[in-house]
Image (cartoon, helix red, strand yellow):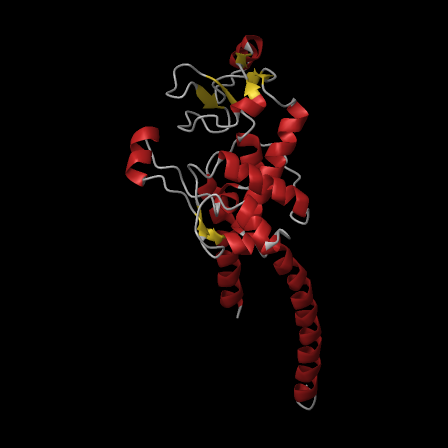
Length: 254
């Protein structure tokens, strides 16, 4: 019995620690603080996705009519205002970009984003879309502090404007004096200039977009969490009944 308990404990430790080792080094991210229950935010994020993202990034596992239902959009309104591609409300949210051409244009075909929030986390996406900066050495003239040497252009630049990356030479020198070599450079981004939105307005747009991408990754997430509470309550009651039944069966032996 002791060996069995030890084996279970080791297995659990391996399962818990494996994702930490697999994840590798992480980058600092900002909290998105989005709200999946805010349907108006989801609608705004959906519209932003259609306007700026769908041309390259599909949502091939998400259907239009499921999105309309979950976001409280009438099907007739959804077809008129939100269906940029597809012929029927039951179609998946896809685009017509040929993968071979996309790979030639961008170096790699733009990924499908249906499950991106589950892969990278909403906080990562929120931070990534706010940390583009000018880098003339890159093919599209921009780079990203969250995803170094990214091949994606800054498609939201007309909203955010441009940012410059400023190296903090004093902080770098201080790190070297203290023997800190892990961080290659210490830098910050200057406030965006030339965009149609203020910094706060742009952050709100990205928060809505992140909210929608998280929703698409698991449309029934809120229902799952609500149901989970009832399942845990049921298991707790079942445990008590099973324990009482066990005592009744074994009372004559003990």
